[in-house]
Picture 1: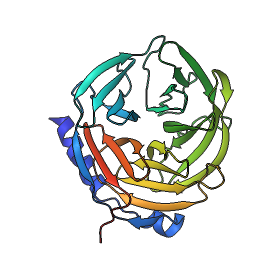
Picture 2: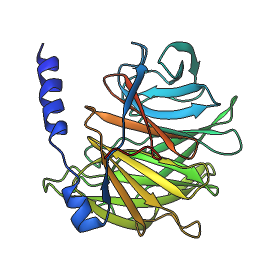
Picture 3: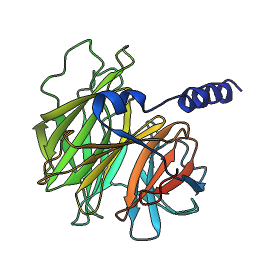
Picture 4: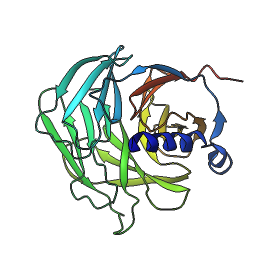
Length: 276
């Protein structure tokens, strides 16, 4: 009962978010799209925190902290097709999943709410064996809760990570870091940062590598990519979605975005179909 009340209150809070700050201060134009509910994830996916596409018709999802080391493959309507155990892996705080152009899957075990973890890990799975990318942040300050991470994507042999801040100001910093996609111990390289009135909870890159999307609780942000440089210098759109605890997003072709929330809802919209 208490959980339902908290989700209800959280839903009200998300419904009240706007793109006003990002429009005026960041240059992300407000835009409206017709958002459709496609379906609902299977009950086994109780805290969907990442999303990737497997071919044209299937979704891959993962559970948040404490779940099994499992990828859940579903139809686009959420019907469970199979559970895929990831060998030599454990789920301490899985937050994101993505795939590269060579058939590898990356799972981010880097949830870090208190910014105190010393075992930040990205699992690299090629379909049989699992390797580890372990990393640290070069600028993490003890006592500052600014290096949680729930969002990343792969491109150009690299992984791009977007941090989430738990510090008290309403406008929060999101930092962008890059890692090599090769296993081993690394220090993340900081590329850019941006201040948003939102906590970033998921990320995806468009298949043509000309745009990337960030999702938060209640909003999606789109940024352009110029000369293959991943940064915040080309802000495009802020889209209000207000669909509760949204934590996972993926591109479906060049114009469609699919996202899920931790209440198991599956949603989609097309960026070539705007509302008046």
